[in-house]
Length: 376
Image 1: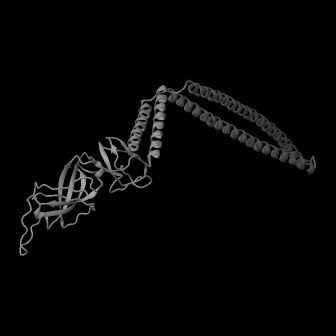
Image 2: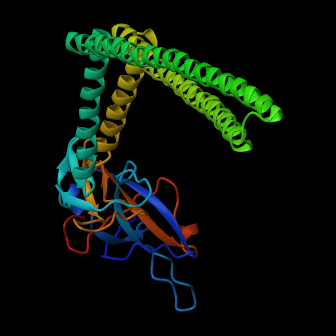
Image 3: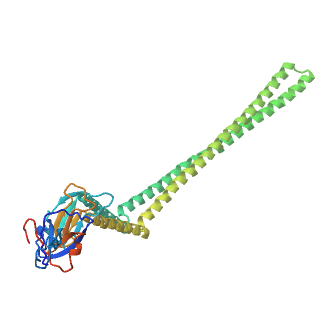
């Protein structure tokens, strides 16, 4: 039998009761890729005589639905996704376009944000590099001079505070010494007066016993003794209180001097340590700055890699077979943005009913017929 195949426009569904036969067809134009066809297969043998009415007529042809596909794999091209599917911002091709390898097909909506991330990462590299150079160079001469001036100011303050506080201490010590002497002299003078009036009282006491004087005279002398005793007691108490107060003031002045000078001295030591730290270029600081620069450069590489995901390129020389996602739409996760394939070599996929598959043999010639009469 010599088979002939008639092709009609038909859907791409494949019923379970059909068998699929793939037939190669070389040189068919890519413009007919989107067409769908039916195939009609006929026998190679010449027509047999018409059988008698009682004989089952011979099968002359097998008809099957079919479609044209690129001989190679059909590629469903999509942009890499992260947490959510991106949207298409620009689509640079249309169905039927020929595209070259690495040709830009589409631009994703997140392109501008990823570009901004890259620019920010590059700016961080500049900042980190400048910081590294700053660390290696050490402190500025002006910073060192300012710190040295601060140390000199604190040292001058220390000397001034020490002198002023010591002067107060010396004054209190002198005052204490002079007051002690003054109060001691007062007590001694009053004690002498007490002794005099006591002696006078004893003499008048004897005279009163002898009847030489009146009792009133003795009472007067007794009063003088009591008054002198009170004066001595008051002088001793006043001396104790005054000396105690001055000693307490002197003690407080010494404590205040020590505390004040200790604070200023600590400030001087801290300023000197800061000066040494400013002058020193530590290896650990350099290594830290270098690590920060390396991290910033790594972020640039990551941002560049992520930005590439915003551009969708064709992996090979091919033709756009179908567009599945248009600008403003979320990328079709199942079918991608576009479907493309190499259409220089096409093949026909025939879907033969299971009941007819036994009538089709390997190597048998077929005729492919387009319903639109584009080819036969």
